[in-house]
Length: 265
Ligand code: DGL
Image (cartoon, rainbow, N blue to C red; front, side):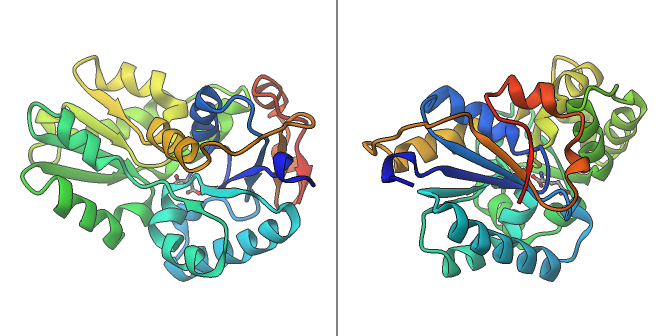
């Protein structure tokens, strides 16, 4: 592989990182991309810190050897908030992580009440405590886990309907927390969740603005790769861990994003 065709490797447990890919395509349309979905490990949000850290570091090590990426983006909040430090220590390529967009949310809120929806593993991370302390110490940040959203987003991208009751349950639980009725800004702290933006807008209403990190991450990647020659030698590649059947139903979502059909890692 020539240096020009060396890919950007986007990594997630599933299809959530495609929300980062969509933003990246806006700013770097000519970049060769390999998207890796660890479908055999999905969902990360229900795993322990040790399980996620070992899995992500191991897979990214093997993938970096095989694909020789120019940059790796961990397009997953759960993996980034747990394992970003570890992965940076063991890989030599630049690594960009995806962390909850608390900073922009704190700048946007008018009421001072911010909701944060993530996976079970993400919302308990010290990394999130630190972001809160640094950027939202004078705000009310209400965190809630919505593991069901991950499956709903995976299903939606395979053309299946979204069960609105799942979204309503989480919205009700968030609003019932002290200060929850004042929430005007919602951090989508899992890369799967922007895939449910239409449904979330319907349920939360127009007075609540949704924030995620995808555009900022895309800009960061473009900045780090500024000036590098890039050449695409074919469609982007979408690879999955585990049985390839787990990727069935994704054809339309992949081809509309200039990916070839899913392949096994
Ligand atoms: N997409 C992942 C994230 O951003 C989470 C999905 C999972 O639980 O594996 O946190």
